[in-house]
Length: 147
Image 1 (tube, helix red, strand yellow):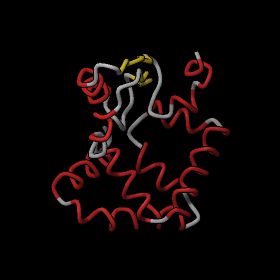
Image 2 (cartoon, helix red, strand yellow):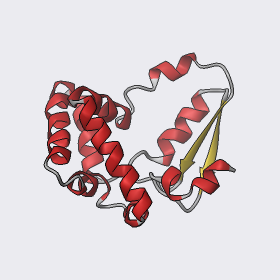
Image 3 (cartoon, one colour):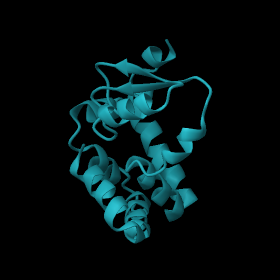
Image 4 (cartoon, helix red, strand yellow):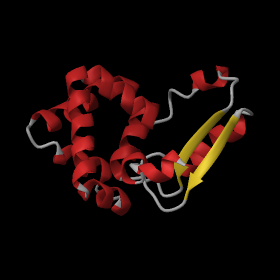
């Protein structure tokens, strides 16, 4: 997990009232006209994610996602940060239908171990592992995900 994600997770657990400040910072990075600053802060330590982002189509989708989140405002970013920190998984306990969670073993943002633990807690969840991909697997390997 990159230092930025660790900082978000730590803040979520120890100082949740600081989330709005972190959210406004993320929004300001995208609003600055250079969303790559945010991308580099999120994915800078993940070689596979940076390789994926360098593909023109992937970079456009990631930047559009950042811009979309900016339009939703700081509250959306705070919610996203809570998800990254694993604070919003409680609602999953109420899901009883079969669920396949597709996750990369090399995801630098959300650890494989955390998703694996979630799947062991939920009887109806099945973990589908992807060996050679990253957090951006959906963009980087859409054919693999579609299988």
